[in-house]
Length: 273
Image 1 (spheres, rainbow, N blue to C red):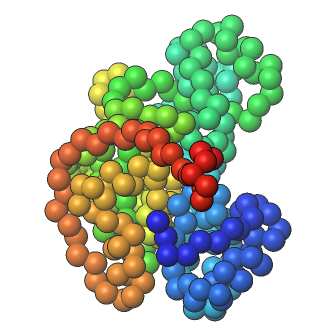
Image 2: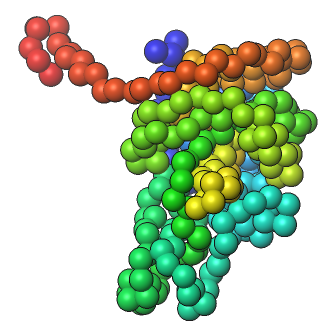
């Protein structure tokens, strides 16, 4: 779908930066807009170098990325100002079940487990994995797409209910207008000094109180839902990089369903590939 494409090493490869610079110079790239939880780190750590090449990496600073990456640091920084589920690194102090165990540095819902009793908890502890333990939240789950300026001021927040997810990515969702959620998430983004896009996860507790789970300092996998509702984040980011004031769009409350489509390809001899 793009006008040009390039192959690049994985983000933690030592050749990633060298190859990235080659591509920037070859195509005259002016904006880097990461969309994964991997390339945000080399973009952020090399921000000054990249800007010296005339390229703007729209990504938060390394300190912000680390707080968001480490779910326990997220809890420590935000729990005094916002409502978060009880979170601990000490499973031996857990007395109430069920609880949720998840990797301290995980992403995409990988490794998230519900622990229903003490025997399950003891078995998990015996594996010696680096986990955090959180209060179980049984209610409705929300993803909130937030866009902040290059000066780290939150512009807008678009909440959506996660009706269905696969591998941590929303496949069915409903955009909702909720001023309280929007205000909270904009405050969270500003507290963390987010630059550009982020997506925030929240979920309802037993008493229906909405609690903050995590902050992903990048475009979310379901950002297209927000685009279809009226807020085109990439377009607004390009406006900001160009020095223009982005207009705040009117959001439509819509429901979106994703589906797979099979595409058959043929070679020049009309043989199926």
